[in-house]
Image 1 (spheres, rainbow, N blue to C red):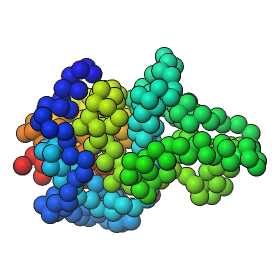
Image 2 (cartoon, one colour):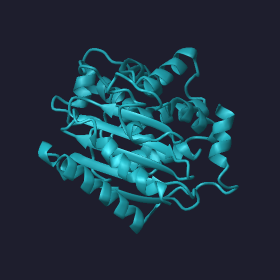
Image 3 (cartoon, rainbow, N blue to C red):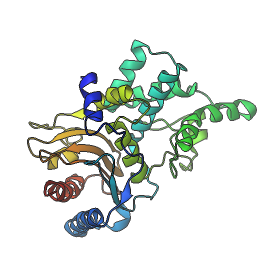
Image 4 (spheres, rainbow, N blue to C red):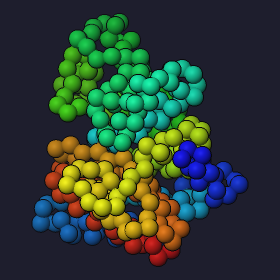
Length: 307
């Protein structure tokens, strides 16, 4: 599987994929249409522009990727989508030999992405930052702990990612002790993402540019979703988000995130007509409206199917 994914990432051309996507008028109109459809369909639910963010990157021509977005630079709590960043950071440190590859780390990375386990995510973040949860800290001890935890932010800032915060664990209930001190009583330092940043990272994974082609392929193996059949779980990452809008013959790799106030999906899609693209959709304050993301996706997929 890894070998096949590496070959897939390199098959489009002997030239390496471009590291930056250019804005495109036609693609922007497609995103605008998806935005209008979603806002109109859920208008009676008081779904407004401030509750939606979308970024689309067309990777069909990997040497000339194109991008469009709606509120793509807006900082939003990412829920479990942040786990993509922790996955890449872990592979970076493994590649550099700065952390050890163990069966337990492999198990946690898999559960973090495949099942979106918060416990697994906490373990991975501990390993990649050299920090652990526990009682409150003060003074120099706290500063040292915070500096280590912010190493993920420094790594991605060095790669040119802006407007994001990737330093907090994900929880079923909430943080305590030093974790609460670091996050802030009102969530002042909670995780933050833009759909532009997420789309960029997922496009780098999909095109073999995240860490190394081999490690990108390993990540893609964890992100692969089978959206065929049905699921009784409305939060199933294969069937409860972008996958709802896909028809047989398409392929999906994704990482979703959801809380009581957010519902997001970051998806890389390959269509039967040869179109390859990343679609990241964030929604806020309408977490129970499970058809918003598929509504956006249907418009995008329809437009990309006509290429």
